[in-house]
Length: 227
Image (cartoon, rainbow, N blue to C red; front, side):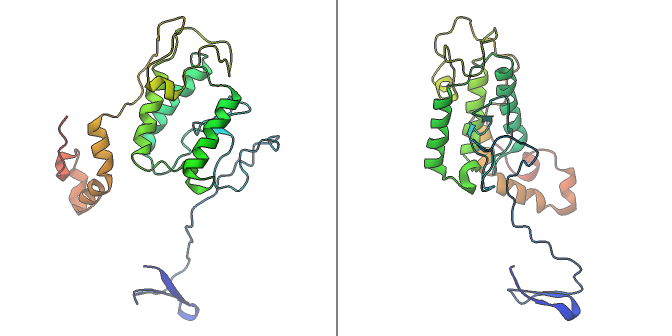
């Protein structure tokens, strides 16, 4: 419950439901956080952070448009971080190896503007609440799997650009057959269904109390998802 009153003389916190906690030493206000990269200098003309509510001038929540060798993985919120990061890493590795080309600066800027129109320019910009997180993982997978065998010319080479949207529709004509390397995560209908029920699964696990330490599978906590 919310805090309604502090009683300083005996270090008591009174909550909105009338309950109390006595002899409190410290109260921490967990109000969220702002994005901050104070160690980055010389980016004032096209800043990475202004208000702190989001990271600016990025393409696909990853690549700093003015200099795409500056990359910000796993910025997003409301995601399942490990498969999300693995899918991003596959794209990052292939871009840095020159096997995936980024779009032109103008096209990357357009992606940011379209995303701002959809999500807003504030705190919600990087929020990928389900199913957006799952869709993003699959888009990164498709993009990474369209990597070409040989290195491209450079960042921003637009000769044979393969963007996430294009990859989802099938790769454009390129000089070499795709040779993608290790396959990043791809979520099927089963993973979508599990993700959609994440809160219920977590609660069921916690409801087992100490017995939860012996639970190893979804079936152990009462969830069966057929392929």
